[in-house]
Length: 186
Image 1 (cartoon, rainbow, N blue to C red):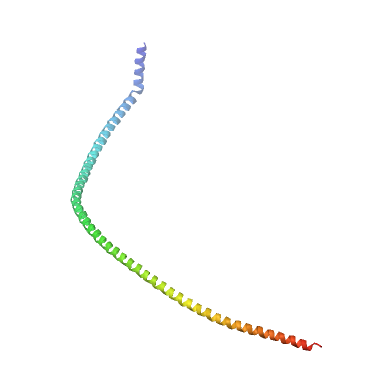
Image 2 (cartoon, rainbow, N blue to C red; image 1 turned 90 degrees about the horizontal axis):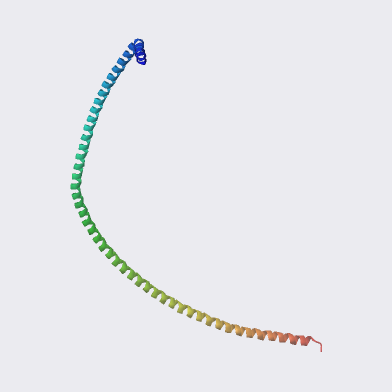
């Protein structure tokens, strides 16, 4: 009975909803077909794009590879020229260093000679200055001795003047004593 009822129920459903379900199933099938077509077209289009992109990348990689090889070749050639230029520059630099060494040696010799001459000149000037100082010292010593002598002579004259003034003072004192004695009443 359950089977009978289940089958009846199916029949009732088919009668009520059958047409709509079939239409719905057909619509879904059409959508699935269209989706499958679109998906297939999209897949083909993507594959085509990937293929063209792959081709482009391969072409660019090959181009870069070729440029790299050319550049490496140029560098190899340039490296030989650079080495040659470096060798020439090194040779020129060694020559300049040799010239500079010679000039420095000459300059050292000139400085040593100039230093010797300057030292000798300073020594000569020191001797001349010492002689000049000694001569001036002697001259000043003689002048001082002469002035001392003049002062001694002047002092001697002062001593004589002092003695004379003492004597006059004594006389004046003596006369005043005499005058005061005379003025005293006797």
